[in-house]
Length: 320
Image 1: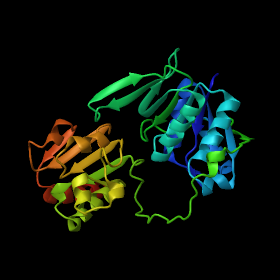
Image 2: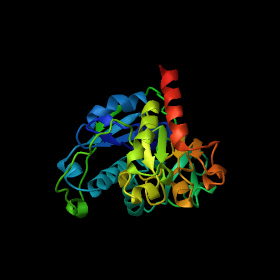
Image 3: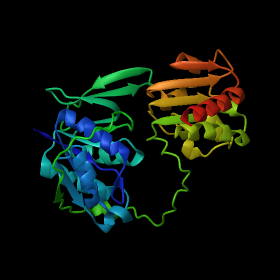
Image 4: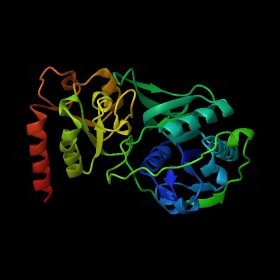
């Protein structure tokens, strides 16, 4: 069976959930061959094999940690040349999309970004995407070369499927540009104990209706009761009520969770662009005419200061 390259997103050998989702999608179109780079690369093999990787190509070098992007592109190109895959799948993160674009340019292939689904086809894999602020759904395939596709987190289930997971060392020759941009320092991100926003299965977001940073603990309490990530609209972020790293929308982060709860968010097109592919959407807003209600699966017309605490209490009671 044809092989599909999957670039592994991991932290010191701990494989992140979006990569396991990629393996599920890769199995639809071929045999997944994982490419794990950097510190802990070999430690990923067990988990990757349990989720369908027939081979795990590994490489570790100082360049992967000391320099940005290009060393990983060099390695992925080396894997591409060694495997001759029918497709390359990468997680649709900021770094992932840059790596994918650079690889596609190098190998003369078309690229599809932010796919939300993949299906096999005799002429090449077909990717589903959301377009024009998620107002339309498109199905497309690459018409030139081997398709390079980035896939949004939460686009597929994690489905274990035992495979060999054979570890093979990947020989990488770094290009002249590999050392062009050096990492001069790192600051650990303060942990909130909540899931990463773009990877979370549930996201609870607050907007202008929260009416101040002092009220965001209401949103956080609901999120914590559900084991969810916390998001915010641009209005809330611009007002300084919540960090920019939590902004959901066209100029923020794009999320696609199983459940998205919007509290006090009117539903401007810029916000919808970042969350409209969520599987189930719930809105809480006291304005019955708010545009968000045109989008939702379930809507609650009411004051969030009344509804959210009651919802939180009910969830805690049922869980406990």
